[in-house]
Length: 184
Image (cartoon, rainbow, N blue to C red):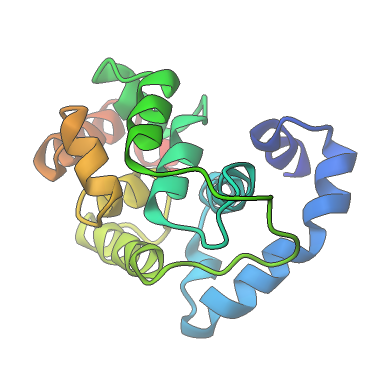
């Protein structure tokens, strides 16, 4: 919902809708060419939108895996957020680790910000992670699993003690505890 998008971006529902109305459509066209984006849950979509906002705030002209990771870390709900909480990893921990790896850019770019090849690979890998778990959707947990295998986010997550095996075990446990309706 636009309220959720606004929450991720730190603005009102109306402001989020006005700012980002075309973004989901543009992202859907780019990613949706393979049918991938239509599988994304609303929280996963807002994570992608939040990654663009993170790139913009850092003055970067590309959306990388580090921006996807920042967006996931800023979420308060969802399976990926629960994985981070259970691992004792805070938003501040992720932000500090990312900022230690990437240099802030210049002025915030205007308009569309493209994905890096690594971020595209991570989003494609999220689909494979989803299918590997027998899911028909792509949620924040699948994006987090994909980020454990895609640099530079994978290196940041490893520094924070989160490798693929640990994240997958946590995702599996959370979904088993709460049922499949929790996905995303």
